[in-house]
Image (cartoon, rainbow, N blue to C red; front, side, top):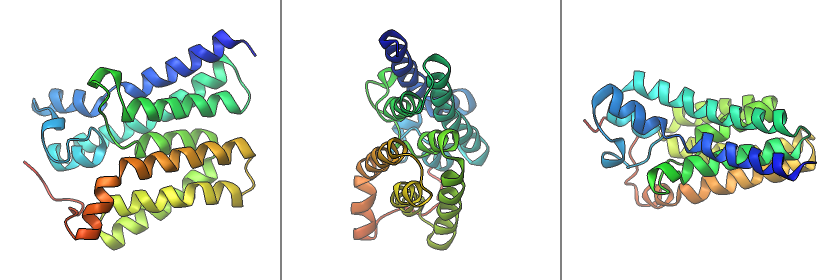
Length: 200
């Protein structure tokens, strides 16, 4: 395994993940910086509240694509199982702590979904279904995201994916919980906003 290729895959994964599509689309579509409105995050949920459904759908698609692209970059440059997963993990880190946003960013849910789609499509399909059902029933995107975070490593293990896959998806799940700390507090206090509430 060429260490230079491995390093390049990780850096490329991070930089792909760090592209702040939520900010770029917000500025292009509405001339606003979504970091200054709503939750201040750059992901699709805040884009929905600030920019509306069309822009949010584009942000969602591009953030998912970042995760998929990072995994494929790892496969193209190095191959195997581990490096593509680490490249995907780097993309989620890039999305959450973007060098282009002074290490601010989103919560990594959509980019995590992209990584799992590219590496464990069956796990991704079940987890996405659980997310959609949970959001439909509760009205809270954060609850759906946390449900997905719990399910991802369990599904990866139950469906007998290789150990590196289970370990890395568990890391992704832990990052999702970490980035949702404030949401968890708001849920406990009954202050969390439900899906669809517009800020502008």
